[in-house]
Length: 189
Image 1 (cartoon, rainbow, N blue to C red):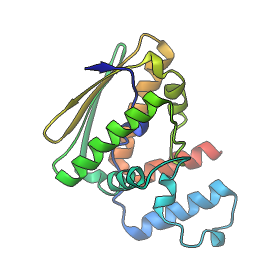
Image 2: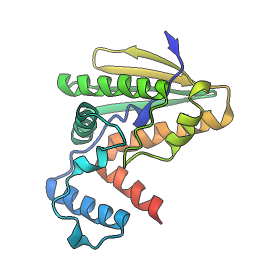
Image 3: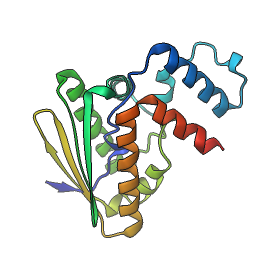
């Protein structure tokens, strides 16, 4: 089944599992830098704030949180194709698998509708993918433990953005919230 789509936050698959103290300390610093506040002004802001967007639902935010917290249980491979990408994202945790697949399908639907959630941790690469969404062909194939996504385009800028975003999502899967926070700090400088 071919449809035009893209994956937001890549099947943003992926991601979190740091010790609470380390996660809170890094997040506290990042959020302070992002908002130009001193560290004392952040109060008890938790990781969930990073998943809120312009019209995100509680279910979408919960899916993102689950993937970040369970990122070490997720496996992900990316094959760069001449005209796009092929990703395989899986987990043997049935609950996490459901969250992951729901997130992918939901975000593909958002892109199809042009409803960019502008989540705080969102990569600027997604701006290109949302802009060029009509140029992307997406195939989704479920597996017993996750989902295979193939995305192609005849547009060079779009292919480059697909490949960059796939690498970003893989880093999120590997390193969790630290990856997202480092990217947010880098964008501020």
